[in-house]
Image (cartoon, rainbow, N blue to C red; front, side, top):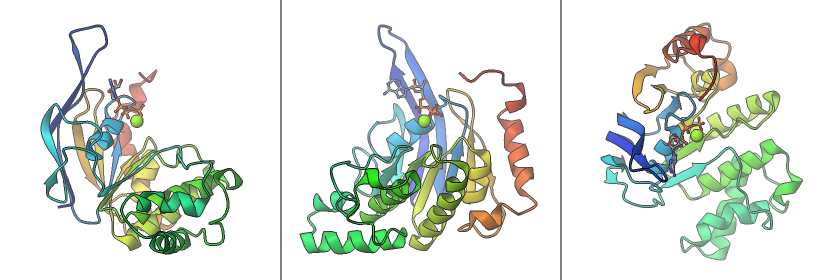
Length: 259
Ligand SMILES: Nc1ncnc2c1ncn2[C@@H]1O[C@H](COP(=O)(O)OP(=O)(O)OP(=O)(O)O)[C@@H](O)[C@H]1O
Ligand SMILES: [Mg+2]
């Protein structure tokens, strides 16, 4: 399988105290190849920490994380990571941003360029390679960041709320764009989101986490066709059923303030 968490617990030291803060508790799950898994849960329950451990930036306190059968023990070049902010380098053109991750992997200049151009094309940005990030819209910048993430040919991509800063209309278009690109590239994906509807529109499976320390309360299989097409899924009659179920699991009706 592509990605596996085996009984993972993560604690952080608390500054000025001997206590540990347990962010995640005993998380176990496996993804299949090319599966798209969304993770939802309250603020502070450890979602970003899960991604950081998958990328090898943090180590679990207990348990292990595996990517493509190998235990993650440090920063992992088979994992692509994308955040809410696009983190494109402002002084490089879009093409050179997409080529950035390839340069350190020993590709020749011509190969870097060729791959960057091909990836920009897949992400519907052909013709914008010579632009600088500030000359693109927010949605285009996110597509450029996806192109950069895909250019390294990752086995797994990690998305930490990549659409949450976009306006409602751009978000719909970019979700569709990401979903179809990821589906055609057949890459295993872990998407963190606060948007329950987005999880239903995009994922094969949703992990619902509890309040901190985050545990998996339920794994929901999204049994709706057209995974690569969120705009089609949006119209499906079962969407509200799934959202309502997560609403109850997360006890959103009882929540007055977010921690
Ligand atoms: N590097 C760190 N050092 C200490 N504590 C940390 C560190 N990273 C995360 N934490 C703590 O771990 C808990 C989980 O944080 P995390 O960022 O994973 O939550 P999250 O589910 O992504 O929240 P949000 O939805 O608000 O982004 C929080 O209490 C946070 O303070
Ligand atoms: Mg987070």
